[in-house]
Amino acid sequence: MAIMITDECINCGACEPECPNTAIYEGGMDWTWGGGTELKEVEIDGGEVIPGDAPQQPISDEFYYIVSDKCTECMGFHEEPQCAAVCPVDCCVDDPDYRETEEELLAKKDWLHQVA
Image 1: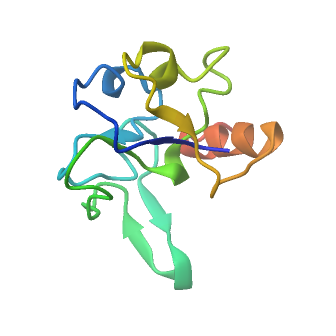
Image 2: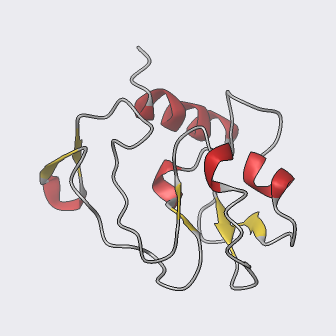
């Protein structure tokens, strides 16, 4: 599963630099697939191919957010999700809408970082 940031976030920003996939963004900020990854382009739903550096709409305008499709729960990098480890208010929690196995998370990590 991916991690999500709840509305209890105090916008301290401690989580953002800890993410090895650059999946965490400040509220209101655009995100990109390529930021923090090796992705040069991405095929999105419907088969459209977009550049990895194409800005995407923020998921939240109010507080920090995690792009679930970039979150690997730090699998292959750390023993536990680093955002949750450093969050002073424990608002980085499992996202019940994104359930993935360890194998799926590791495959996502390899895809994001273009590991053959």
